[in-house]
Length: 223
Image (cartoon, rainbow, N blue to C red; front, side):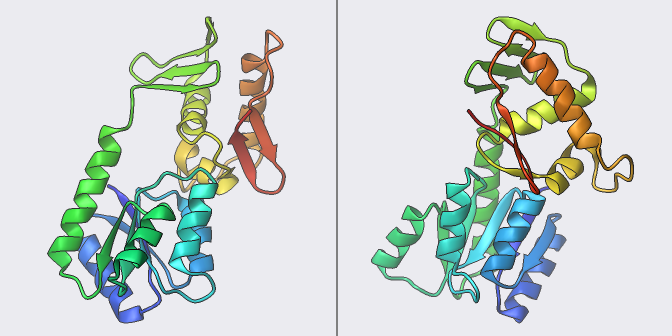
């Protein structure tokens, strides 16, 4: 089930989109202003974002630009009443993948949404790389240079999630939901424990650290 984040301050439209998307089988989250939208996007890591241009607190343009600056590559479709070419170009330059001019037909929106989700899934490669680290999803083999790193199932899941979002700060909530499940109710230090396990294995030959701690937030894979 794909997860869609709708960032829209017009309550009737937001509710309409929520009901239509749920009817089509999508999981839907709603945010009513730009700052909330940015926060929710970072927390739940949706598969696609429907983002209104004109929002309180922070414009959709700024939300889009901020997400891209953080390394977030989630498909973003702008919903806008602006249909001038310059406005469209500005939205695409900010990092949006597509735009739909209001008012729009729901069938057109659903069609665009399916295209971007399909494209996103097609571009999900079997082999992921970051610097000298590689991960093969088919064989579940992880290497640092030519050295094969033996990981447990949970260590692999955590490593795959990190390398799938290089240079993107992942919050503790995001990691818990993705790796351990949304309803995880175990040891609150479980992430720190497994990050330590990964670091020991990734750095056993005195390689440089690539899993960095962002204090008070989470972790990021970066040089």
